Length: 350
Image 1 (cartoon, rainbow, N blue to C red):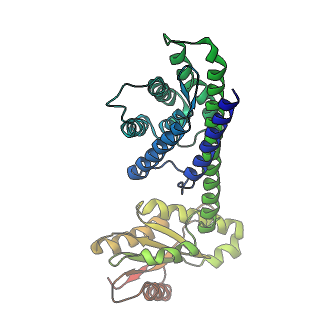
Image 2: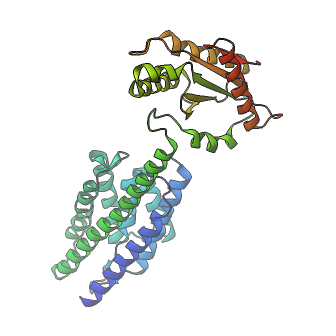
Image 3: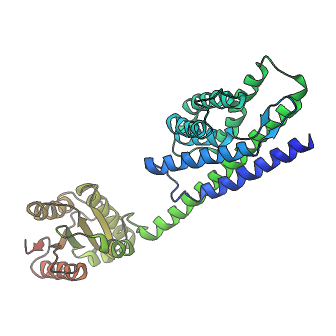
């Protein structure tokens, strides 16, 4: 029994260490859709299962006890039946089980795999944000397949019941520890992602801020366009109605900008009452039309309290002959010209 406890404790340590290293491959809290990455993780789970098999503890009746099922169950619950099956097939191929008789543990793997698939289908684990309690219930159900199979063996030996109970308990504890490590790492990524997002979002209007605009500049492509707009006579709004109403105007204007442009475009609040819109992959013949549509969308619908609000702006198409900064400066100059020539207009060279 001491040898069994030591062997399963070693298995448990291997699971915890491997899970921690595995969690470092996560760079984002959302569930991955990259098939190559998921297949790589399934292969890592298969390799972990094989290593755990090599650390199996033999019993007097010839049975080998280890935690080989655990990483395969985790990958099945996390990514679904096909990736779980892929990991299992890798294990069987590596051990030559397709050409030799299956062992009791191998059949138990398949039983636990089927239970894991059913559990995943009927639980909340399949959703993107998984409550940790879903992972707490999972091992109790999944590893019951191990017990079901062992109890139905013709060569069943009642003397191994304590050993089998210890194996079941170690699987459950190992699963909980492993899932907790992954869950905590995913929550950490979610928190840091939220903090990072807050530094790039304008807190008042909830559109991108100047910092995000500067970060996006290197990725802006030739043939795209930038529209820089500024609210006309915004100082009068603040002086007449107060800054609270002025903030409401900024929020409503940002909302209209987002609703007017496409999902592939980006809206930024550069500061004060100045905004920028980046038109991505927009045909040149439509650029001026979209800029005018933005202006009309803002002016045509009355704002609460202040009535109609107009904007002036400058539109520039990005080209290889001009840097992003130079193009932005030109858009700013067009904006200044629009202000000087009567406001409520977009000026461009297109």
